[in-house]
Amino acid sequence: MRVYSPEFKADAVALYLSDPSHTFEGIGKDLGISRETLRNWVRAERARRGGGSTTSTETTQVDSPPMAEELQAENEALRQELAAARKEMQKLAIERDILRKATKFFRTRDDLVTSRCQFIEDHHHAFGVKRLCQVLEVARSSFYKWRAGRAARVARERADVALAERIRSVHAEWDGTYGRPRITAELCEEGERVNHKRVGRVMRKFGIAGLRLRKRQVTTVPEPSATPVPDLLGRDFTASAPNTKYVGDITYLPVGDGEFLYLATVIDCFSRRLVGWSIADHMRTSLVTDALRAAGRARGSLAGAVFHSDHGAQYTSHEFAAFCRELGVRQSMGTVGTSADNALAESFNAALKRETLRGARRYDGARACRLAVFRWTTRYNTRRRHSANGQQAPIAYEQQSATLTLAA
Image 1 (cartoon, rainbow, N blue to C red):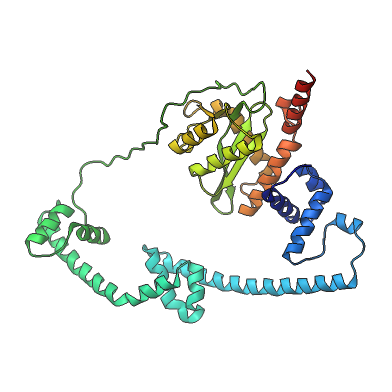
Image 2 (image 1 turned 180 degrees about the vertical axis):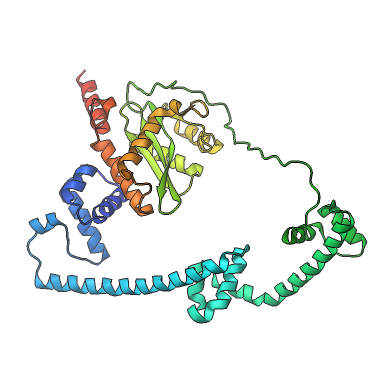
């Protein structure tokens, strides 16, 4: 009997409940579990939430007709849900009105913190300070602190205006050639007690700049690994046994309106099995270490295995190199800018997006994206046929290989 992690159970229940047309039979086949196991997980989750009758077509066919008490309890639950939905709709309508007004208010303002506090001050009689702070993500203590410092800010603004006039005078006297250091020296010599930081801030604020003839050059210096990483695969994405050669990559998952999630993968070259993966809303090194850690848990140990990737900053970081050494994994990298050197991982990413998006440009949100990836990756390992495996699913191919090895 398999032991399933709490995360797997929670994702399986969420996937089943995400669409009323889902059945225990269909989802169970996709995830490689029995329908009764999934049914028990769903019942346990509904009982934990407070109960509600099962609504799937399959359960209606198998279970006995609901009793009057059950119908009454279901009606009461629906009434409570309706009341909560109405309350939430009212709350969202108020927040929508706030954001509409705030959009016009912020359009021409540079300092967002000050703009938010000023907006709250101008509209707190209509919406209340608490609601405005929640919608604009401002701590109430910060707003009240901003309000208490209003007199000091007015005085500081007047002082900045007076200083800006003196700076302009010096700036004009020297034909606009003086910058912050020389203007500060001029002011100090005239008896003005001011430091170069304040002078620089006021110059930036009022658009005063010294003469600059040199071109600015921006260079990017990537973080190198402790030692150069060789290419141990040479575009040979085959392996004679499982747990010997892996490839991995990071791919963008477009969600919502201009946002992204990021998926890191670890794929076994022997069976094309997705052994480890991680999904997050960031691209820090922890994204790829989490994926490799998941592969280690799935295999028991990765000692002696080769992990091949591109030259992304996450894979070339010292942190990832140290983590590979800790697991006993040998790193391998292809040529910079050559996608063919990691073609197996690139092909996996393309298939995932093609078969989950189905022509759409984006997923319907972060939750829908996570559930779609969870379902597809599980189906990929347990059911999806792969041409490199003789049209067998990766797990089935590994099991057949193990059986043939034992027979030999």
